[in-house]
Amino acid sequence: MFASLSSLLRKPPWRMLPHDFPPWKTVYHYFRQWRLLGIWERMNKALRIALRKSAGREEEPSAAIVDSQSVKTTETKGIRGYVRFAQQFTS
Image (cartoon, rainbow, N blue to C red):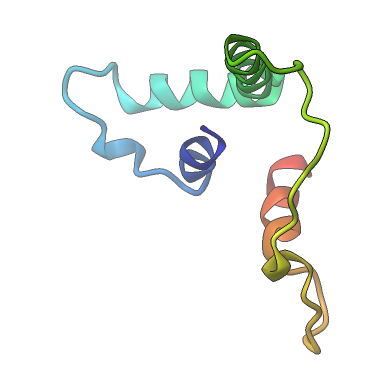
């Protein structure tokens, strides 16, 4: 779910919404408000908890997986990758 939401966060083509949607400015307004209020994150957390409970698991995961591509170092200075992507929405 996060992957589909994160694709929305990257400059979405708001003007290309289907014709049965409200005007793009209205849709963007509500999307932005929900993002600023943390509603998307809360929905994601609620869905994760519901799915884990339905699978007979604890609400919170007890382990995490870190992809080796995420922790490789580089000689290029500056913030790169996910951290840079995430910062554009928090500052």
